[in-house]
Length: 548
Image (cartoon, rainbow, N blue to C red):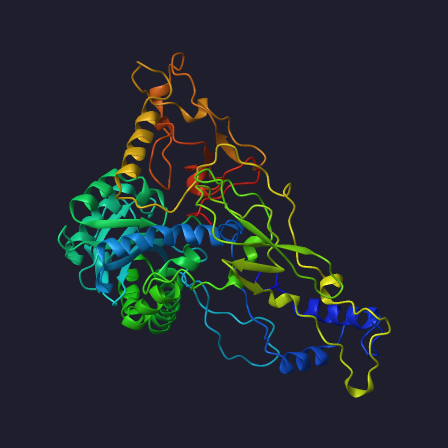
């Protein structure tokens, strides 16, 4: 259940123990009024078994669905030929990612307080702080490219870069988020710092952010300077991106510690953007170590290259949905059926032999699979650890089960399984994929896509700015505002009175005809549905990442 991200709480465990004892006729002294076991029994049970209470990390449904064996193998099907062809040494394999640094610590450290205190506080600079984007990049051998700071302001002041890490560069944007032109400037900085050339090519692994995968200037620069750019599968960076796996967590912890130390040493003052570079630099120097870098690439299987680095139980969460996979590249794949019966259960479980071809969909799942029982890779069958039947407790004079057939936890509390109708279909959703960005087919596809968008709307007419108010009426009721189709510009006499809507994430204009747009209910900024990750027909209120 924990592997499926539906972990049991302490109360769930206590209720399950009571139900198991009742249904199997086992003598017990549990609380019949509350219908659960006591806390003493729970703590004793935890001591007898290799389990512990842990604080889980929130993981989105998109990440849970997308991290599956199909997407992982698609990435390694691209990585392995590149490694065989170019023979990249470890010092020429890089990973880049951006992170948001706030003037308010994300999680205050625990402090000592008197027993019985109802509330314990910790000083922070503000309720909601300013966020500065920092672009970080590291290699397998622990070579870190000096970071880039993107400050949320229009004009730059050099005081903002005081005590920043040596060699750092800076840019400004009113949103504080990475933009295409800013990423292009960082990429030139990367070329200078890494020493890449056609005679000394490097591999750069990055996620599918629009500033990375839809930036023709960066792709041209990469092809001219021997940089091979490989994009990760969509919504898989939390498990497959080295920076996310090993570097970002200690960096965030050290940065929070630096914030608390600064506030303690400067009473009466608050942290602003002018202190971010110094505090981040101190945390960056502590986190940027060779051991951290090597560990991130090893745990993700990038170097040394190992597609089997992820164990079968790590894909259990993707098997909950059991939805069909849209495989347009190759429909042929083999399946082998493996039947596993747990005590009290008679479920037939589908296994998988071989790996199907790769899909362009963001939410990729195996077709008609129920792999919580068992899974196969090739000809080898991997049994499901959850299918091991528990043994009735006969210690302390407790009687055994009163029935001949033992009722296991699978009968009382079966693992969750979603039906095929539990998710709404998204017709025109943009689909990401793992791809080599610097190869000619992808570049040609991107050029064709941009050309097609430029020709949308009114052929033969000059493009004019369209008023936002002519597309969507003022918002009422707190629901999302959405732009779904281009308005006619012929009768729009006031179209030049207002600027065209610009996406706060990728900075592309609405008139470019990219996708539908939605409006933030707090800052009233516009964003593409795909950029904001809010694709679909839901009427829930939209709040952008800047405001949230």
